[in-house]
Image (cartoon, rainbow, N blue to C red; front, side, top):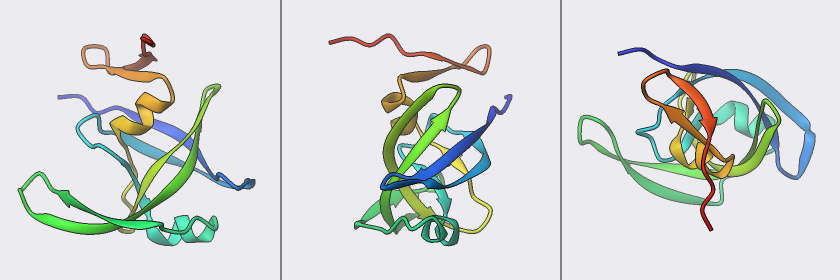
Length: 117
């Protein structure tokens, strides 16, 4: 199975001058995106709640979540983000969907999501 990586700009939704660029694994099986806690806090992004998550091994964990601005190739939206561990950069399905994108599982590329009203 091929992996898809994208370099994404992440910003504080209240101050887009505070941003960083990181290489993310596109994980369409993950609901939310994940960035290291220290990097989110360095951007001034604070958690606003805790959420329970189930890992692939069926282990249940609780993590803090907040909101971040995701920017890629002309697409830009605010989405939930999990305060994760050092070195973990995952781009989840919620972020893709709010940006109007979907992962083509055959070609492993992002495409515009058909928007249905």
